[in-house]
Length: 133
Figure 1 (cartoon, rainbow, N blue to C red):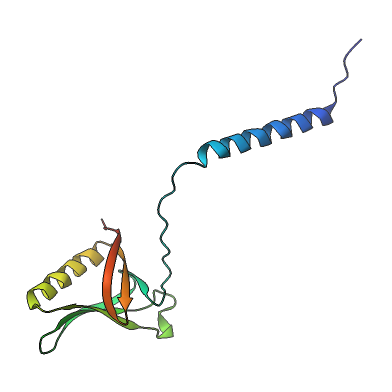
Figure 2: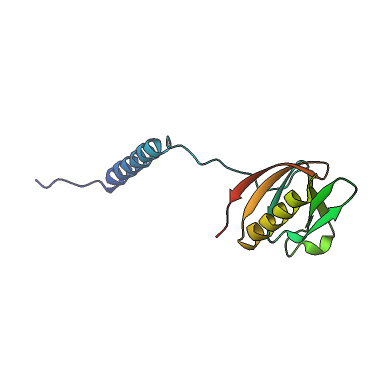
């Protein structure tokens, strides 16, 4: 006597095995450590600096303070909204300010990306996200 095959039971068994395989595979690989995720959206106290957001880099001098100022713009296609702003590093020695200016120029030309923490407009700290090419 021939055995009748039930296609519904076969499909149910195949679906159960498939879901079991997916679940086991996910549980095996879900414990791998994740990379540190960095939010690239600008906030009030943190800004992302990269070549498409920098308009100019310049040095300002006053009596005892030298500033390396970065003029920031919004990247295309939002650059017409006139939300431009300036952030700056502050130095007492002109030599340090010039070194920072040249370093920033090379860094941005090599398409580097950094995240800066600001207090008002003054850059307090920086974190390099991508060193560039």
